[in-house]
Image (cartoon, rainbow, N blue to C red; front, side):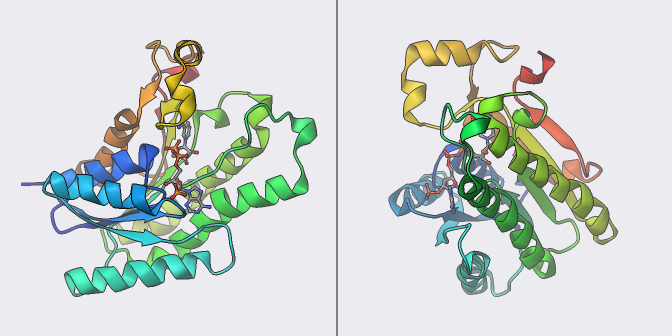
Length: 255
Ligand code: NDP
C-alpha cells in the first residue's frame, strides 16, 4: 500500500526546484498534491503533468506570497479544489518550501530595509500565516515541514538577510511542534545545502565544481536528495519525530 494513500498535501513553490521534487515524491506515495506557484504557471502545470504521468494526482494553485491577501488567495484556491476532488477540506501535509534569496554577492553593508521587508514577507510572514490558516484543516497525524537552509548553521556574510529569515522559520517549527503535539501533528525543519534547482548556475561546470567542495560527499545536492527526507517526515514512519532540525545538506555542516 502507498504510504500516503488518502492524504492531501500542499507544497508551496512546487512549480520547480526542490518543491517540484517534493510534490512528485508525495504524489508517488499516493497523496493528492496541491502544486503551488506564483509566476510560472507552465512550470506548475508541468509538475502536475509529471505527477499524472507517474500515475499520481495533483492540481495547481496560484498565489503570490509576500503581498496583501496572499494566504487568503492561496487557501481559497486550495479549499475549492480539495472540496471538488475529495468532498471535504482536509489538509494532511503542509510543506512550506517557497522562498526567495538575496541577490548573489550582496554584502551586509548593502542590505536595505526594503530588501529585508521583502525577504521577511515571503520567507517568514507568509509561512507563519499559512500554518495559522491551515490549523483547522490539519487532522490528527498531520504534518508540517518547513524548509530552512544550512546557512542558519554556517556563516556567509553575503547571505545574512536570507539566513535571518531561515532562522525565523526554524522558530515556527520549534514553537508549533509544542503547540500541535497534543493534536498528534508533527512539525519539523529540513535544511538543504547547495541543491541543483535547475537554475543557470548549475550549467556552469566550474561553479558546480566549486559548490560541490562544500559537501562532505563532494557533489551538489539533487532536489530528490532533499525530497526523500521530506517524504519520510510526511509518512507515519516519522510519527515520533517533531520539533527537529534535519540536516539535508550532504554533510556540508561537518565543516
Ligand atoms: P527555486 O528558486 O528553484 O523555486 C522557488 C519556488 O518558490 C518556485 O516554485 C516559485 O514559484 C516559488 N516562489 C518564489 N517566490 C514566491 C512568492 N513570492 N510567492 C509564491 N511563490 C514563490 O527554489 P529552490 O528549489 O532552490 O529552494 C526551495 C527551498 O529550499 C527554499 O525554501 C530555499 O530557501 C531552500 N534552500 C534551497 C537551496 C538550494 O541550493 N537550492 C539551499 C538551501 C535552502 P514561481 O516559479 O511560480 O514563481
